[in-house]
Image 1 (cartoon, rainbow, N blue to C red):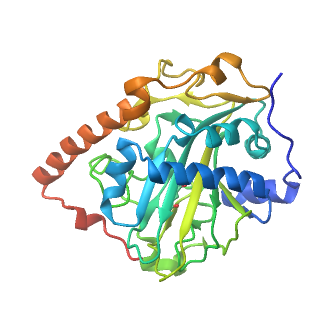
Image 2 (cartoon, helix red, strand yellow; image 1 turned 90 degrees about the horizontal axis):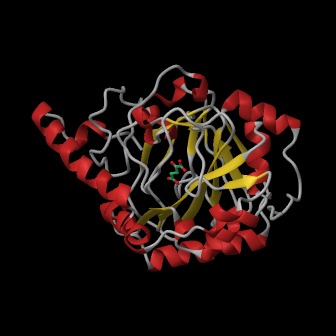
Length: 320
Ligand SMILES: O=C(O)CCC(=O)C(=O)O
C-alpha cells in the first residue's frame, strides 16, 4: 500500500488551536530541503513551459508568473503530492480521516514587479463546499512584506461575509458576481488584526479557505519571490458548482452535493488509489486546461456586462 512519507514532526496542539482561532498559522523550518528542491524543479519547469492558462493570467506584468495544476505536467510536483509529508499536516489541520489533493498554484514575482494579489477568500473561486479545506503556502526565497510576503486578516475565516473573486490584474472573471467587494484592508489597516510574517525557505503558512489574504507587488530591486501553494480537501467537502461562476480547469464528472473524488482529487491518505495515481491528463486536456478556456471566455462575457453597468477595473484597485 503506497503512502506518503511521515513528517519529521507533527503539528502541536498549540498550532492546531491557533489555526482554529486565527484561520492561519506560520510554521518555521518544517519542510526538508529535498522537498524544496522538488518544488524548485517543478517551478522551473513551469516557468519554461507555461500552460495556456498560465500564459494568459501571467500576461499582466513582465516578471509575474502564475500557473496551476503543475502536478498534471511535472513529475516532481506529482511525486511531491504523493510522497511528501504535507498530506499528514493537512490531515491534522482539517481533522479529517481522508485527505485528497485539490491543486497546486505557483506564484512568482520577480524583483520590481508591480502585480499585487488583491485581498480575497479562496473559497469564492472554487466549486466546493465544506470546512475541511486548507492551503499551504511554501516560499522558495526569503520573504518579507517588501518582496510580497503573503498577508492575512486573522479570524476573518469566521466572518459571515463572502467576497467576490478578483484576480491579479482584476480580470473580469467573477467581478460581476453578486458577492460584495472585499474591503481594502490597507486603507484602514488599524481596524484589522493583520499579520505578515517574514519567512525563509522551509517555513510554511497554513490557512483556511475563508481567511482573507493578499500580497503586494515585489517592491525590492533584487529579491525574487517564488512560492507554491498546495490545497487539500477532507471528508466534509462536496462538489458545489453553484458556489462560483469559475469552473474547474479539468473535466470533472462528480455530482453536485457529493464528496469530491477520482483522479482530479486524488486520495493521498490513508492510502493512494492505484487507478487515480496511474491517471494522466492526455492530449488536448493536458495542454489546454479545457475548463480554463471556459473561464477565459466567461471573463469576456463578464467584461461586457461590467462595461454595460459602467464599471471599470479601476473600481477594484486597492491600496498596496
Ligand atoms: O502568492 C500570492 O501572492 C497569492 C497566494 C494566494 O493567494 C493563495 O495561495 O491563495
